Image 1: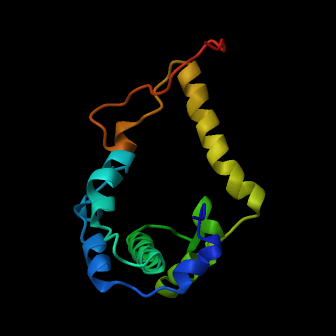
Image 2: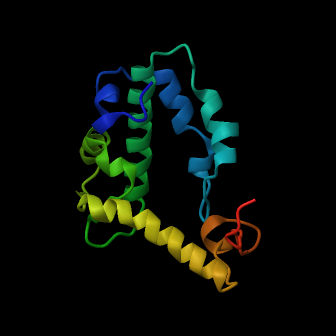
Amino acid sequence: GLEYDDKGAIARGGQINESLLQKLNQLTYYKKQGPKSLGKEWLDEQFWPLIDTRLKDRDVLRTLVEHMSDQISLSLASSKIGNGKVLVTGGGAYNDFLMERIRTKTEFEMVIPDPEMIEMKEALIFAFLGLLRLLDQKNILSKVTGAKSASISGALYNGQQS
């Protein structure tokens, strides 16, 4: 009944479900070399069906935090980040428990900027994608997403309401 798990408080009170964690960490997506991207379709087809609805919500959330922190720390370990610092933005930056779990699994320093920058990053990215669309330039890059070819995504509307 909540919009989100504020600061990861619910997850913090849960128990890891080892069976679910193993299934999540063994998804073939994580073995695939880049470029790659995730879409809603992948979540609907591959990820969400693994979640046992008989588990307590707090245990599912706890297991998901462990899964995310596992995958993020593994990704960081295989990265070529030179200075050992990672700028954290997006909703995860507000999840204190997730950030704690990542910090326990990596040597990298997690740098969490002020809320304005956290909120602004996604807006700026989508504004840039929109600008590229207006300029009729490709905004979906195959070398980043793994799509078969680069393309122009988005729809233009004339502002009239029907």
